[in-house]
Length: 258
Image (cartoon, rainbow, N blue to C red; front, top):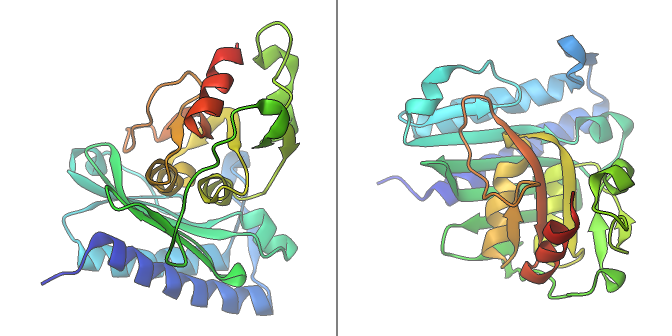
């Protein structure tokens, strides 16, 4: 009898970490994708190949969406779909930073039902299953309960705080920080180490899907920049930005965004 989707994702993420770590230590060949889509390395492709073989082999009826695989319309007709970023934070990987992640999720009818974000070089494995809570290395996660922006830290790129994105008066007085991997940023908010996360740019589903469930199971509210719930496995797999925080701070973001 097959195990749970979460167990499958967890085992696959750990194997992805072993593969990526070997390339990280010796140095991986890199090149740029067409049309300014950013860099890719042989590690991204090796991890993607392993994940495709292992996950699709275990669940042949599931669809597949990965940053490093050619996309097609067939996945949108499937009840379940894997949404995968083999290495989230490829630029960090190339630069020698340890803050990159494997982001793996299962989506059913548009909603994430199982998710893992794994940072092998930091020994951090975030995981969640719908209705089962979120964990970091097995310990339960709870989102920050701060309510005042002046006491809160927002993970965001500097352009997100430009006045043009906000109602008159500008952005609330958050303290801003940044981390390179979007999946890691979402997970850090779920962990309660940071209070909120915001990106206002169109955002690929594979960067967000795993963190979406981890955050919701930790008690956070996560939406697009307009306050709409996130739905995945869209034909064009992009979201209209992402805002995530505890319920009170998420309300502050929504009330103040233009």
